Length: 315
Image (cartoon, helix red, strand yellow):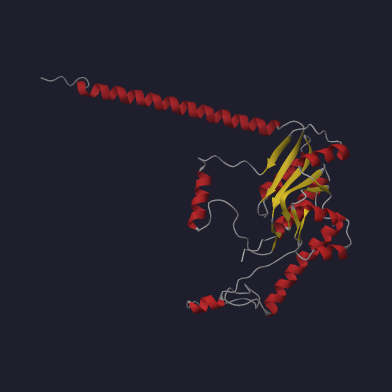
């Protein structure tokens, strides 16, 4: 008779492999858990202690929009005694008027607490220039692009196209200007006049803050506010920036004019570091953009009132 009290001989090696596999996974899980705990504790310690005395760098890169996280960081910099000055590192064509205004107001509040200097790299136009003028001093390269002082509202009239393919729009609205103008009709009449008043109101505020911050007469500001872009050198000649140069020149100015030691480290505070390649939120975000027909990365088209320099497409 066969003895069934123990494992059959042919199952013993399989059971041994299974036990070894379980031990291996337990070890790997424990190591991963330890690494995660160390990372969390280290991050909390860094955030709690914070770096020593330093110059903070805040990057304003790409299309500007309102950003609660960025706003919170600027407020924290104002209260951080370790931050001796702030460099606003700009490379942006502008963005929404509300986003530019948010940055201007936040940097104005920050400037009241500690020195703020703006450095324009390739591009600091429209709402990005609105951001720069909040600083104590503006630096730009000789061939950087600045200016483009203005506001716009864009509308696409696809009426002829929709008629051609047999699509018609209809709506019930509470007033004659609700959701006007429609995509199937031109911008005209009272709808156009209403939007022009909207643009004019934003433009008037933009002109006022440029004139105030740059020490220009309003008429002189209006002469530069036809939407034109200027090189850094032209901007210097017209009073839109203070000096030619980059971050090194900005740090030298902070030392000579604001007594900020030039040997302090410059630490990035914004943008926030991107999550790792394995982050679920990153992959979910990319999947959602793909489902909507948007690129996996990069800016999304803006809707509404904008202060944005746009290079015309080649003809």
